[in-house]
Length: 329
Image (tube, rainbow, N blue to C red; front, side, top):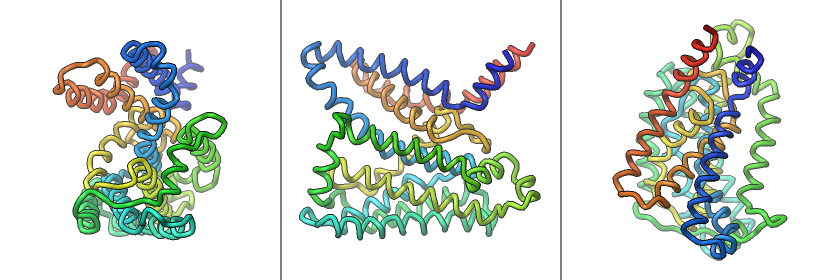
């Protein structure tokens, strides 16, 4: 029993994966029933591709949020930061732009994300304003900047890039699946670096990490900068879906990123978790919403389901601890 408890404590993604399997099977069963066998078989890959590409922006935001939470901080501005970068991207491109122009502008977009993340990190680490207050304030700053850049929904993306992203199926699998697999591989490499070890140490016990010689201030600023860079990639994944953007689209995704991270087994206390769980947390959240849609229930049920998911996700760590205490008795 002790080995089982230790396994689940160290592998925080196990429960999210189990929950994800149950939800995805239910989701595709409802799609199969509603579409019919023949229509479902013809549209299966299309549905899978659509779902994965739709989840990818939030997956990237959830990973950014997870890194910040593991480090013992939080970023309530991450969604609006993504909105700033998305607005910047779609106002700099034309439909006929080349790959070279695309890469040049996107490099600038990553720079914007990194600088915005550094701003959060400086106020949190150097000025010592609590991260909740800092990032809540900067979320309004970023929202205003996004509205200034893109007052109305619209914009453009290079057609050559959007076509490649939407229609390319390496080895017959959607591009989104390959991107997720690459993200998982990069995470495994990142968490085993010295920087990754310090990230967990600071989140687990900041004073002990400082006593051990870890530069807490510099490290926390770096973590927020990394989160900003990931938000830039989330913005790219978002605008590649439609070829345009809306400056207000990131506002609701911040809370979704926190919910997905907690649903993925990463607590808000810091020092525990990873990126794999949040990936499955985002897909679980998305497929649950799909299930509600396919169930043909009243429109008021969707906000209710969202609220219940948020409450259960945030309360789940406490429930797990309570159950663990009862098992020990």
